Image (cartoon, rainbow, N blue to C red; front, side, top):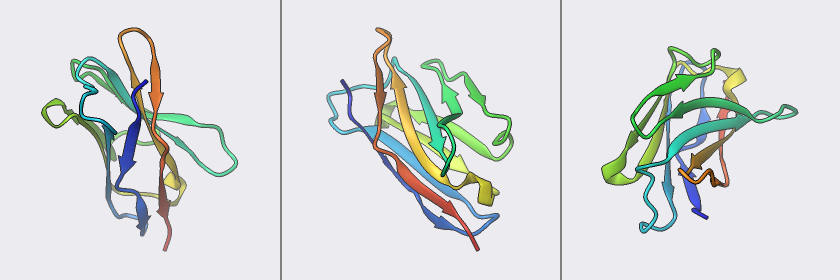
Length: 118
């Protein structure tokens, strides 16, 4: 299994921006062939898909973040990103990185807290 490490979370005011990053804990693991995604779990709610990107760069987003969030990957840096703009209070959640290998094995990070508050 691949251990994933997220970073970039924090406290931001409504309307602000954050950029999350996710990378394997060990450089020997490559995300090149993996479908990568960001999920989030808000307090008292179930985990939900935020955005996904295939190994070919095809993306999809939850309706609630379309036009505000952008998922991207830099395979040369073995890193996944989530650029979050125009943040809203309702975006407050723990954000998790997800990687699905060709074999179907699913890997998760430990999560990073994003808090949007004035």
